[in-house]
Structures are given as structure tokens and as C-alpha cells.
Amino acid sequence: MTWQVVRTVVGLWLVSRLALALVSLVGGALLRPVVPQMNGAPPTAETPFALTAVLSRWMFWDASWYLHIARYGYIRPASAALFPLLPLLERGILLLSGGGDPHVLQALALVLANLLCLAALLMLALLALDLSGSVAVATLTAALLITSPFGFFLSAPYTEALFVALTCGVFLALRRQRILVAVICVALACITRPTGVVLLLVLVVALAQRVTWRKSAWRARLLASLRILALVTAASLPLLAWLLVLRAHYGTPLPWMDAQRRDFGHQGLWPWATVALIAHQVRLTAGSAFASTRLFLDIVPAVATLLLSAVALRRGAWPQRIYLTGALVLMFSAPVVGTQFPDALISTGRYALTLVPLWLWLGRWAAGRPQLTQGLVLLGAMLQAILVTVVLTGGWLV
Image 1 (spheres, rainbow, N blue to C red):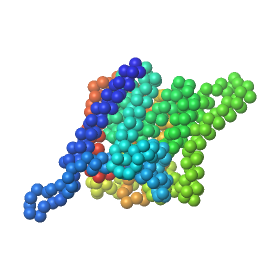
Image 2: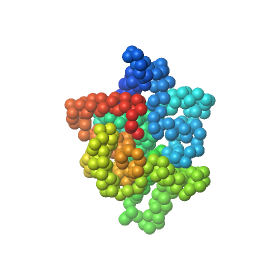
Image 3: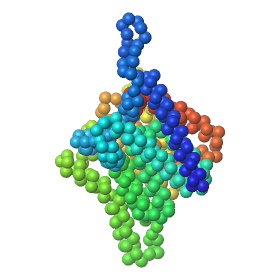
Image 4: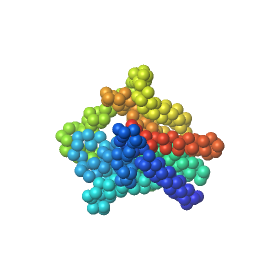
């Protein structure tokens, strides 16, 4: 069954690469900037169509930040807001390529991103297979993720694909009693995205569940506690090391939080305060079609994520419930405040890609509803094509 799932997921990945390539090339050819002609003639393209121009469009928003860190390090204070594992991997391919041409680095970063996308899909499908024992559930879980409206972020030089692969690695390793592998995956996840800290708590709970606390002698309980402490400490060492390096470099106690607040507008609020802020922003943007649409693209995924998570939290093992709960709390506790655009829940559609337990539940649910699932996959792919076109033509989706 495992090889059947792998073959199906690889085929799905290849087809989705072809679809994204076609959307990118068509968008690059038809939606280029144009120069109007004063004599009434049809407008002409500002520059000839070039593959490098299409490639550069995939380096949007955070992707360009990660590439900058990969090339120059954390030289800008705002760079401290971004975690180091993806830039380290990009730095590795930069060294292998010999550096120099920025277009070569962009191409290699995009290749790396797509390989990480494949890794994320395979790990998610294998985890779903391990949990359900069903090839159909495993492949549907991967299909729903990659065809979701914001699934193209898994193919961009962002951290979502890498984090999904590591998160699935944690849950799969814990199920198979491979504690060292789980610790390594947690350690890497902690220097990939802020949500990685939730996996530290998952590791603690999963390790504690393996100890019969009531029936063990006090020495056995003490040794078990020390073992858990040692493993969690080992998993947190890369994160602590990175924070200490940033502190020494920038001279402030918490440069990551400073950069998030100062340069990206993220403020710590209670989730209910975030809801009140969103309600205020909905009223504020009622007269602007552009601002309302932008807000809509973040509010709808947020509401859908909350509703589906309420169902998913009733199922699954405790480590998965803890991860999903912690990730949701972080998502709604750091809204964007005080920027030029009223949009507190920026990137919720992208963040939802990393909610692995949610996608696992969706895969199980979809397996019994084939016709509805076909419609959802088709609708998701159509919406994704539209959103990719928006992004690649300079639109606002981060």
C-alpha cells in the first residue's frame, strides 16, 4: 500500500506542477505591464516576454525576504522576524551553484520549494495511511491540500511545505516509537516557523503518555521526568541558539518579537480582542471594494478553519488536538494592527495549510463522499488558479 500511495502522490504532484507552470507562463505572457500608445494604436508590452521575469514573480513577499537572508544573512533588523531553516537550505543551494547570477538562485530556490512540496505531500499521505490504513484516505488527504485555494504557497519559496513535512514527521515518528526522529523533527520545526514551539508541547505530552505514572515507583517517575526534560531541551536547542545569535547581533533581548511588531505590525492580543478588531475592520472597509475583498480573502479561510477545527478537535489523539489548539491560538493571538491596510488576519489561508490534524480529518471525511469531494477539488483548483494569477501580477496575497 505504501508504494501505491507514493506513486499516486508523485503523479498528483507532477500534474499540479504542470498546472502551475501553465498558469505562470500564461499569466506572464498575457498579463504583462503595458505602455499605452498616444496615437490610438493598441498598447504595446513594456518589455519582451522572458522566462526570468516569470521566475522573478514567484519571489513575492516573504519569498524575497528569505532569499535576501540566504544571500546576505540577518543584516536588516526586519529580517529577525523570519526563521532561519529555509534560508539555510537556500544558502546551501547558493553555495552549490557558485553564487553570482540572482536568476540562478531564484530558479534553484523554486526547485527547492517544489521538492519540499513533494516531501510535504508524501509525509502527509503516509501519516494518513498510517492512521487510517486506507490508500483512498491517504491520497485524498494529499489531493485536498495541494488543490486548496491557497495550496500554491506550498510551491513558492515559503516555509509552509517544509513545516508540513516536519510536522507530519513528528506525528509519524511518535506513532512508530522513533523518539529520536521525533526530537530531530521538532528541533527543525522550531527554527522553521513560530508554530514549531507548539510541537514542543506535543512532544512533552506524547512522551508523558508513555509512562505509567501511578503504577511506577518514585525513582522510575523521576527518571522518566528527567528523560522527558532532556529530550525537550535537546529539541529546543536550535531555537535557543538562533535567538541568542539574534540577541548578540542586534543587541536587544527579543529581536524576533521586536521585528514582528515594528516591521510587520503583529501585536499580541487575546483571541476575543482579535475578533472585535476584525468586526471593526469590516465596518471600516464597507465602502471600499478593494479593501473589503482583501479582508474577505482572509476572513473566510479563518471562519472555515475555526468551524472545521471544532469538528476535527473531537477526533484524533491528544497530541494532534494539542497541536491544532495551540496553532489556532497563535493564529488568532497575533493580528496585524496599525498598518496602512485594515487586515488583521493577514495570511490565514496560508497558515491553515500547516494545520496537519485538520487536513487528516478532511481526508477521512472526504473518503466517504466521492462526488462532493470531486467538486471540492475542482473548485479549490479553480480558485487557486485565480489567486496564483493575482499574486503573479503583483496582487496582495501574503
